[in-house]
Image (cartoon, rainbow over all chains, first blue to last red; front, side):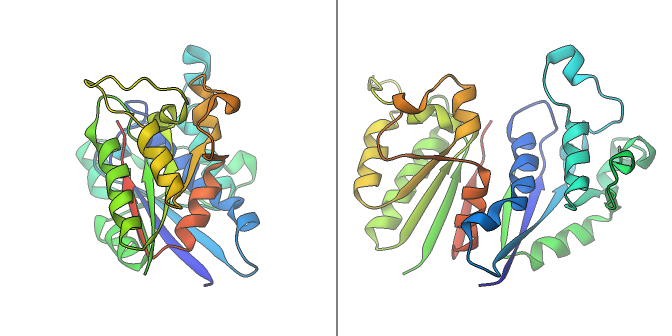
Length: 136
Length: 119
């Protein structure tokens, strides 16, 4: 069957509910899915944040200190570290007044990937190219 | 016939989306389709055995057992489940416990995927 492209589309803000975080952890699980697949089969997810889904990713979060839970910043860094394609909707970031500068990177961890801030049209193209779209 | 994988995230009580997921699964398997169900988030609380079916609340156990008997594969996210205090030996027999890659692997082999979102 080869590679199956998945598009994880997150429209709920981080911390408000559980599913917006579960989208991230499910996407990261692509790293280990091959143990359950036949040789040559792979899953390639793209993680897309739209609408209120762009909220909650600022740098220097203190979720572990204050609530004893992993921050979404840490999750986002893990995504980049495992070469996951992460897209944020440019228009929605502008709508909420979020600058690209506040988004974390994982340079200090040695990640090659960066969060991509892209027009919605590009996210829509990703959804069209995916075999399955999972809406969180 | 095709393969349908349902990702079920809503809680057993408080949302009819859970009931919808299981009823849809039964309709699909009755038509001859292969069906997989992945429980994550609050839906994982529904795999605990010995649920008392009070008429004012949805019940998962009865439907889960029926679906298992009909050949539906059901798996719960182990991390989500233990985080809710449900131990493996307290779970409904026949429900698999695994990590999120189980869901992705089932999606890989599916013709259709329905992601039923949670809270």
